[in-house]
Image 1 (tube, each protein chain N blue to C red):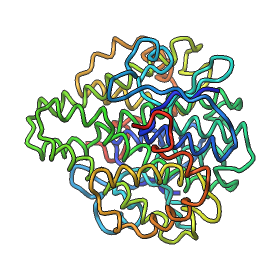
Image 2 (cartoon, rainbow over the protein chains, first blue to last red):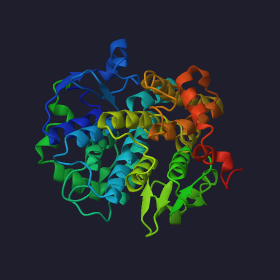
Image 3 (cartoon, rainbow over the protein chains, first blue to last red):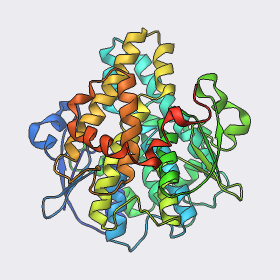
Amino acid sequence: MKLHGYYRSTASWRVRIALNLKGLKTHHLTHHLRKGEQHAPDYLSCNPQGLVPTLELDDGTMLTQSLAIIEWLDETHPAQPLLPSDPLARAKVRSFAQVIACDTHPVQNLKVLARLRQLGLPEETVTAWAAWANTEGLGACEKLIAHEHGPFCFGATPTIADLCLIPQLFNARRFGVDVSAFPRLLETEAATKDIKAFADATPDQQHDAE
Amino acid sequence: MKLHGYYRSTASWRVRIALNLKGLKTHHLTHHLRKGEQHAPDYLSCNPQGLVPTLELDDGTMLTQSLAIIEWLDETHPAQPLLPSDPLARAKVRSFAQVIACDTHPVQNLKVLARLRQLGLPEETVTAWAAWANTEGLGACEKLIAHEHGPFCFGATPTIADLCLIPQLFNARRFGVDVSAFPRLLETEAATKDIKAFADATPDQQHDAE
């Protein structure tokens, strides 16, 4: 398998953690988002959105969208499950992940921020927009797991929720959000620090890091 | 079960189709989004994002995020499945759904458009933003299923992909997008017209329609 990604793409980062937790080795191909390499015709034929990540299977099949890729990995490599087995618990994990993957990250990604700049908005307004999206999303996440046992978002083992949370906290800090307002989320982040699968997936550990 | 929603909320609409396809009766509670009723403290205790839909189970459990709700419905009521059984086919259906639910709808929802207005952008710029998000998202969707058999997005029966597509086409038209650029998506839409589960879920058929 090959993972088309970018070191600082938080959606790619989610998939990197999943691959590491599953013990799967992949070849990593980088597409430099700030240079627009994701819009190259060759890549658009793999991923018509021009976004990363894309997981290229050995038979050439292209899987897009980080959560769809992660659920595929979980269904085809069931050891170290990333979702609980109970449907209600699965729904809560997926809901948390979607607060980030649907309502937070896409509202503050490179493409949207570039569009805001094209409208002539000053840089401080663009940064404030990204901070707002992160504050709203992570604030809801904090409440969603307030009564869940830790140390991870949902109990004793990492789930898709943690895979979405860790990269998003990185983004929130990048945009100046005071993450101390989210103590339960920080407790989870601390629990992931000593896990090699999480540590090896951070942007600074990637071969294309700048 | 009770569905907290709003007639014109496309995320609520997705869940309405799922409930209808599964033959599940629910009590529908409306939260008038344009009057800000989703921000009432009572509702925020159900859904900390202040978004619709929320599915309230008979024991008082609150499920949020439309795709998480729909997957829970599919897992607990397996007749008339909304996902294929093969993992690779499931990944493709989920990816299509997430192009809409992650990268299209949240970039043009009420909350984001209100924020653009707060920044002082004129109404035509706000509408152009919403049209852009729909054009980008649906354009990618058209390509993702170009080689899939119809009449639905992925074959002979509706899936989560169709549940996301039909409401999004409504939004695209609302914002003036020329949807004739998406013939494969329109073919799917046409196939859903005669299905009562889809027809009964449209905004104009809801008790809170204005």
